[in-house]
Amino acid sequence: MKETGKKIDKRSEQIGGISRSNGDFCEEYFVNCYKENPVFMGERFDRVLENLYPDPAVIYDEYDLVLRNGSTVVLIELKYKRGGCAHSTKR
Image (cartoon, rainbow, N blue to C red; front, side, top):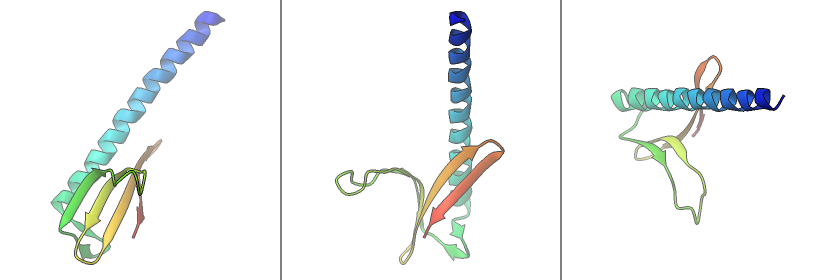
């Protein structure tokens, strides 16, 4: 029983590593897409920032993708779930 538990723990660790790799791929895919064509909902952006960490004294978070222009900021959180990449936005 103890050996079975160790095997399950090892498989869980391997699956977690695969999921992280897929998540990294998902982030890279969307970052590259927006860098190539920085248009979101019909609006063009002049800055595409990735993995932005704001001042932790004010906001403790990390933004996967940030699009900026003179009047709009778009924060995009990228997630990898079974079935593929997805993204959620706040505008």
